[in-house]
Length: 203
Image 1 (spheres, one colour):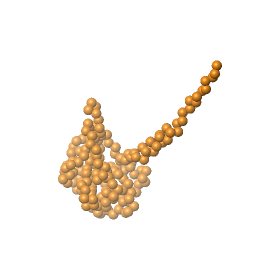
Image 2: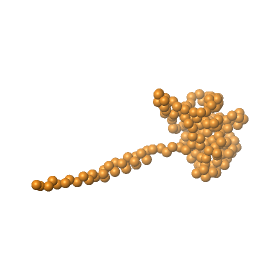
Image 3: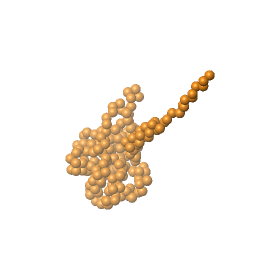
Image 4: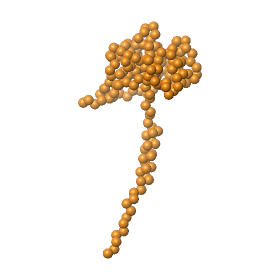
């Protein structure tokens, strides 16, 4: 009886490996790293999904009655810092401006900004270094001044209207959010985004 020739069961995986590495490379190059936040918040849930712009936007984060600011764009941050420096008679060096340009969100009194910028990058986002931006004192409402100056900068430099988003913690008292809204409305900033987390209808 003739013996049947055994065929090889080896499968060439070279092509599959190539595809896998191509996909991995694609996702690594196109993904965006999450921006570190000085105060991560637990967003309130919502069933409506609205895309928040990524350019020309100032984000106000509210948590435990403290306020933090995030301003999109390196040049926007530098120009806003210069204007705030002039407003409060603080002169920032080119190195300090460049350091500030790399900070996407912060919560510190402008008079303490130099001290924050002198902290090593690995420690600069520590929560205890960001006690919040003053906004409740009518004589030192720096939140209002940051919004005003950022709006002026956006219009004078790019002739574009600065958009504002409020990012409040789900457990934050409404009175604090209302106070922030009042500050915006005093500057005729009557339209703004409310950042929420997406949930399903049957959540």
